[in-house]
Image (tube, rainbow over all chains, first blue to last red; front, side, top):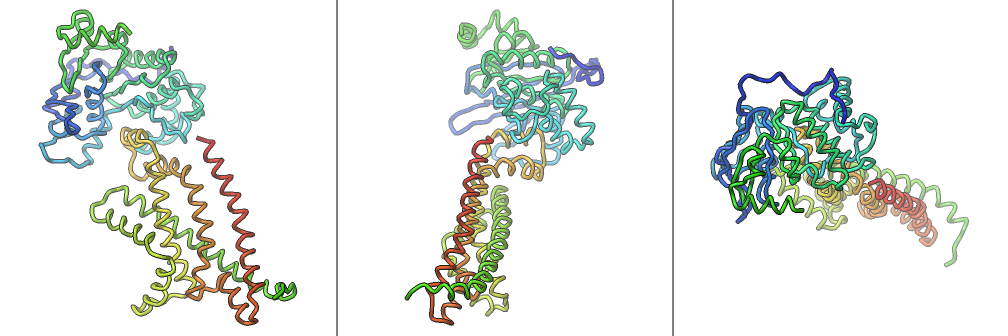
Amino acid sequence: MPQHTDSFSLSNVDQPTRNVEIEFNGVSKSWGENHVLRDLNLSVTAGEKVSIIGPSGSGKTTILRVLMTLETPDVGVVSVGGDILWDVKAGVKPKETKKMRATRRKVGMVFQQFNLFPHMTALQNVIEAPIHVLGLPKKEAEERAVELLGLVGLKNHMSHMPHQLSGGQQQRVAIARALAMRPRVMLFDEPTSALDPELIGEVLGVIRQLATTTDMTMLMVTHEMRFAQDISDRVLMFDKGAVIEQGPPDQIFASPEHERTRRFLSMMLDR
Amino acid sequence: MTWDNEFAMSVLPELLQGLVVTVKLTLCGISIALIVGLIAAVLRFQKIPVLAPVLGFYVQFMRGTPLLIQAYVAFFVLPQYGITLSPFVTGVIVIGLNYSAYTAEVYRAGIEGVPTGQWEAVAALGLGARRKWLRIILPQAVRTMVPVLGNYFLQMFKDSAILSAITVVELLAAAMKVGGNSFRYLEPLTLAGLLFMIISFPASLLIRRLERRFATTH
């Protein structure tokens, strides 16, 4: 496991009061007849690590995509760090605004398919946005990138092109790339689903380290049940566009109340 | 009528001058086509309400009407509205704009070929429109576009002969002029054809090499 360097630390001093970091209020989204979010109300406190589990196609990913403004809710209010990201009245399609862009900057995302820029080296992938979005001088962005690539255990792969890296390595670069923007909220959209089984561990290891050593708010959609149980403060069971059950991981995994959760878990754990 | 070597050699300098005009015509024309086509393609992607359908119509119109008609309109009709340009400039603009409709489609296909995940990564990182197009999307789209654009380049080189109809003295017009003066067409037309080939054949080999290079790197 790569060591945390002294000069760069993602963790802040623990705040005495925990503020609400993410809030969904009456958020709905559907594709025709398929309701991926049904009147979702969800509140996540700053620093909380939340895992979202549930069957495929249940809308879990849409929660993250709405937070990343990759998708527009049909109706509802979404805020991040107290600033409104979406405020959609039914039938009104909001436009991208400067304020939305500023709010979105608090959020970083790691994708299932990594989505690295294939024509840039690992280092270039990581410094691109800090230089051109945050306006960091190149030297500073590179120092930050070197530390982050070290943090994810890829100090020796900085000048590699994505196609020269394994899936697990690519995903770790993608994590470093998202971290380089110093987001307050990190979203992980099935970060290990596209990986060969033997590569899953290295990516989970990095995420685990982030979860235990940083104060970032983390939202993760995952099918790795044991991992979700280990690192989460709270687990949401999502089905057919709604949270049907939520609670501390021990409760959800040991004594789920909902029949649907029980069936889903036995299916996942029996694999 | 038999081939006359001496006559052929005597007309060659004039044909070479025509070839120079053809090459200039093509280079200027392809520059216009590459730039205007790119602007049209990127603007169409921005989905600006009025502009997008106008650009769509532009592409359809340019591709749907013969180059020769477009050349005649530019040459005979525009001067009546006070726009008078030299035959060469008229020819360059006509062939450049005509091909911009094709290059716009090549760009469009190339841009659409860039995976959705790349657009989403750009959005997630908050990169602005300029960076998005110049650093992320276009460099990836270029891979699929280069070979196709190369073929259009070659086609334009040959199509430029059409512009002889509006008195641009390029290679074909030069050959016709020499032929008309001496009533011997065999040598000038044959040489003109050979001169076209001397350029287009190596160019096509080069394009094939580019095709292979861009296919393997990714």
